Image (cartoon, rainbow, N blue to C red):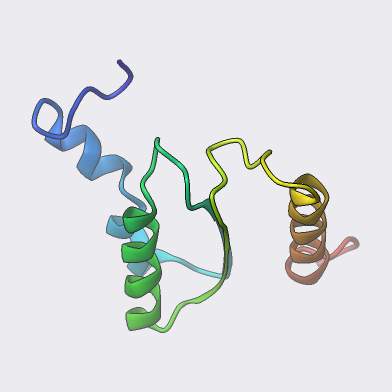
Length: 98
């Protein structure tokens, strides 16, 4: 299994936890999470969101109810997700010279 358990690989889990890097975030972050996700439980993302708020960081957060890791369940989900990403990119990474 990829990372094993936190008890077996505490350093790996510490290094891969986004919450541990929240203070260094620059710019604007887009967080997308399916609440039915079993790889990364929603509580992990909620903890990151709480930390970003505490630090006054700029971010957008979209939770898709009862969607898993692939965010494919539910009518209209794929289109909504793609449009969300396109709007984010056009707003925060517009085309042209910088």
